[in-house]
Length: 91
Image (cartoon, rainbow, N blue to C red; front, top):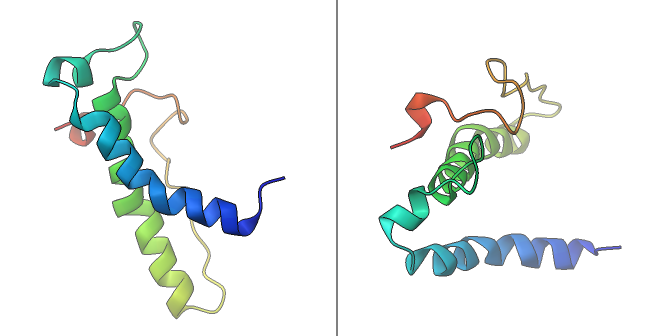
């Protein structure tokens, strides 16, 4: 079982690890989809960024300010995690 300390340590190092993995790749490599219907690395990284910025960070802010915040689904117009990225998500 993963400990809280190990989980926080892993989460804390993830942005640097992702940057180091993506930094050496070309634009074409980042945009390449492994198979039809699968996401490219650029789409995955953008999905993570949008999720952090538009969902996770605002929720963390509310948790600090409110006693018992309630959160609606963040994916009301999506079919799930594996859904194609919305056009506005891909730059």
